[in-house]
Amino acid sequence: MSRYAALLHGTEPPGLVAKLAIYAQLLRQRDIHGDRLWQIEPILYPLTLSAETDLHLATARLLEDPRRAEGSLFAFLAFSVTNRTNITWKSGTPPAEVLEQQLAKLESHRATITAIMGRRDKFIAHLDKRYFREPDRQLGILSSGLTMGQTLTLPLILAGILLVVVAMRRRVSVGG
Image (cartoon, rainbow, N blue to C red):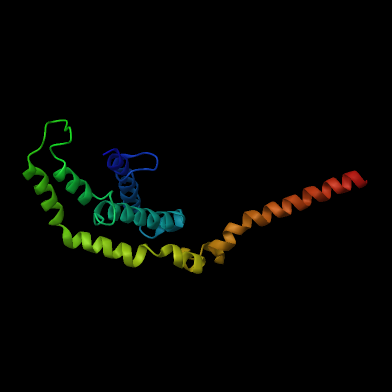
């Protein structure tokens, strides 16, 4: 039970509720500023996409087929139905019908669940492979014509130049 609570309300890492709040705020800012938001703060665009992907994966994890994952809501409800009388419930043992109704309500959204799982399997689940093949294409081009890879190597280049300058100064002061 604590795994579900952490997944929904956790703080390390942030739970689904916190992620939804962040994503909702990003969408609200996008509604207020339109595409100008990306000029105001360019990093918000990839952050928004990242939040959307993270939410999608967390939701898919909750809705996973119980044969593939123990952490799904379906697995939890199936376990609860099977062990209903063996579990100590805070407000007493629930009638079997209550748990079966919860499962039926969840199943009534099967078309949406199938769409979420299909999108995860088709588009999101293999992003890591595509990223390592073509990172710049997957992450997009940053401002000033620099790719993400070039931008990430820039601090290393600057650190290298700084080390060379420091070494040259020491050499000059020792030799001179």
